[in-house]
Structure formats: structure tokens, C-alpha cells
Length: 386
Image (cartoon, helix red, strand yellow):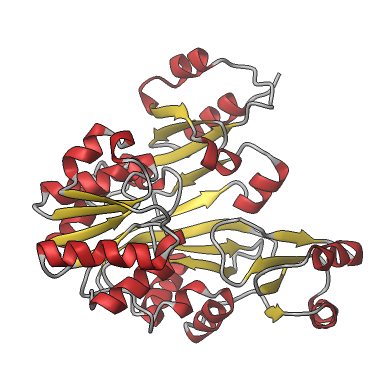
């Protein structure tokens, strides 16, 4: 089996996807703009061949790379990066090379927030009211309907980049004075806790693994306010969340992919759909899947790609929590004291790479516990300030 893998070195923990593909017998053909000599040895050993391009944004370059692999190895059976940034490029390449998966026909409804909102409505899911705007008057008309504050997002965007909370008319004026190079959608502000429904679909559209995370704060607030935060995986998935997630997956007819669906859980317990991403949840969440269930999700994904054969234990044995720290904050306890206090419940800790630090913090800890009260104690200990 020939698998083209975009940007196989990024992020670091996703190298394991490439390793597992090779262990399942696939030819893994890497494309990226990094120098081959700078790739980690574990990744080099897993790649059948690597093609360096000067610019991953240049479609002609990446097209030639895939064409070269197709000429040398035969038909490309799978193409992926598991990274939202490259979804549109991947879809275009799958279309041009007749590769199974998301293509130019079905990708738009998964990338444009305005189109996703309509698909949520089709799936009978509550949504925040929203409108794509092009001028100040259209924005004012929408705000007259929903009131301040509002959230302004690129209609096509990745993560929390270039998202603004607009609290009043001065903020709105400033937003338009900046000038935006891409269409924006305005949405009413929803109060609530962000919860996710995450998992993996096999190639025939069966839901073979699913999980849920609860977030202390949204990525937008974490980035804009430069705060530390935490999020944790649940041991029991609320039934209404699972039902809503399944309806969305059915609406999108998703097959052979990870997914990350986000909702607001409001004070009255109502769910409001926020976002759908057809890739794994970010940060260290794939590792948290493993720690929660004592599985290897990297191996299971590779087995799905190569053999469409997945055997995952869905017993969620632990609450697993990622807890971040920001260097600007004055914490009471040292790293050594945290390691000693958490003992064997601390399953990971490390510095966070610069590109992720605004969202994930400068240093991260992952702890797991069978009891939520114990988990809360570790969160409080790690975050306690002087």
C-alpha cells in the first residue's frame, strides 16, 4: 500500500502515525519543506522515501511530488497529514490523482463555517446564530438582531487564529478599520463550557472509537488572555453528546477519518454546536486517548488505513487531564515538587514547542486518575500561585 504523508515531522507526537503505518507494511512517502537531515531518526527509519519541496503552499510543487511517487511506486492508495491546515490541498490532490477520501466535491462543507452551520441544522443540532458579513452596515444589522458581544471568525480558518470578541461599537469599528483579507462570519456569543466529541471512523463509516473532553476555557480566551488552562477526557460520555455527535457524523457521511466536534454546554444543559474538524483533536489529545483507555490510537489508525481492521478497547479506565503552565505566572510549586506530588499518576510532562505555546502553555503535564476529585487536586496543585 502506498501512503503519501504530508508534513510527517509535524507535530512531534504525530510521527508515531508514520511509524505505525510502516509497521503495518505501508510504503510511507513523505512530503514537506524541512531538510531531510533535520528529520528525527525515528521518522527517517519509517519513511520509504522523502521528497523535499521549497514551499508547501505551492500546489505545482506538491503536485509534482505526488506525481513522482505515483510514477515510481504505482497508484497512491491514501494521502493525509492529519492536520487541518492542509485539508484543502489534500482534497485537491485526492481529486487530481483519484485517491479515496475527502475531495473537491465534499470538502467545502467541512471547511466553511457558514456551510457547517447549515449542516448542523440539517442534523437537528442547536447552533449559534451567524452571518457572513462584507461591510459595516451588514454587521450592524446582525448585531441589532443578536446584541453584543459577538464573535468574529474567518469563514475559513484554523484553530483560534484571527478570531475576535467584539464587545461594543468601538470594537466593531476597530475590526473594520483593520481590514480583513478573507470573508468573516459573525456569531452570537454563547455562554457555556466547551465539550468535544472526538473519535475515529473506519472506511465503511462505522464509529470505532470515541471520546469526550471538557475544556476549562476556549482556545480563543487562552490565547488572547495568555492564561494557563486545563482540559480532561471523560470516563462516561453524556448520552445527549453522543447522540448529537452521531447525527453530525451521519450528516457529513464521514468515512476513514478522525474527527473533532466541539459544542457549548450551556447552564441549562443544552448543547450548541460550535465546530466540526475532520482531523484528530489538537495538542496531546491523541496521547490522552491512549492514557485514558490503555490503547495505542496511532497503531489503530494505521491498521484502519492499511487493513480497515480496528480492535479498540472502549473501556475508559481513567480521567486524563492536560494541565498547562505559562512562564509569566509565579507558581508556588517547582517542577520537581510536582513530579514528587503526582507520583505515577503523572504520565507525561515536557516543554511545549514555540508554535503551540500560546494555546497549550510553555510547559505541560498529563495526569490520569480513576477519581475526578483526585484529578482536581492535581490541577489545583500545579496551578497554585504564590
